[in-house]
Length: 418
Image (cartoon, rainbow, N blue to C red):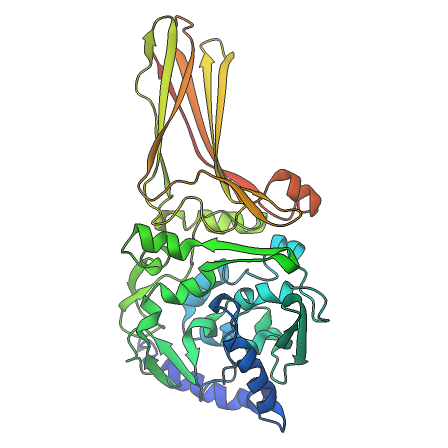
């Protein structure tokens, strides 16, 4: 008689054994050499003198029982979380983001300020080939660097990786800290707090000597508008096993979706598959009737920041929403077109400066009104909402037309008004 095999209840034992076998091939990132400590001390001293947004995460040792800090290693056990992270903006914050690569040329020769951005795009010191220990003349474009003795090139490619949030002092951190695992674990309540996110999503500074500006104020916006944490919206709760064979328990999705606008055309289909887990920030209410008075036809389209607990759009200053309203006669002729753009407008030269900002506050509702001579017949009102991350002009300037999804239609509806 054949017996049905039981699911592996102790999969972590097998993985721990694998870790011991593989450890011989491990990157020598944890082996301290003479002089290493002095490099990290100089880096730490400089880091402490900088605002939070310019502070990288100090070098982290690999927790006992694991071969390295690589996301693939974590994914051997945390299969679902790893798959979600692979689709996330975090995983694509470096080489998965052609726009970022084009706009910020990472440079290790000390001639420009691109390293500033890497503190969010590759936050762990382990990921940074050269460590900044000083700057000359208060100019971030003139960093003094030293080679990182524990640089992990493979880890750098992962951008915002598992260890960014979950590893400190040789321990794997979690929101509960009671997981039985082949590595040390510890409860870290900060993982459920917005402060974990705002180190990078509240990065607001202008560096005039370097013509560089960070305009990420999402943290401040959310604090003023909502009592919810970032995780409640961007990491939807789910009950499932943390690894195959374990009991289901409360955890969160790790897609970290925000705008749901794919970075590249190759990501589009996968992101379409998870849209149902997230709410679009903008809600559009189509008109139900037209006002006809004094020979005029008046149509109201209502739009609202219904679901984002911060300004909409937020983040990168080039992001925008565009609402297009067309009034169309029964014969198909377009009688009128009206457009509204929601976002910020910046002057970039000779130095960055905000010129305009009409973004929507949380729960803010506005009306786009269309008025025209009454055609005396039924009309079709066509409303389309486009979400964008970069202008068409800048796409062309950076030669990114086929590499980046610059904009995407997120709402498209028509109604006939009598």
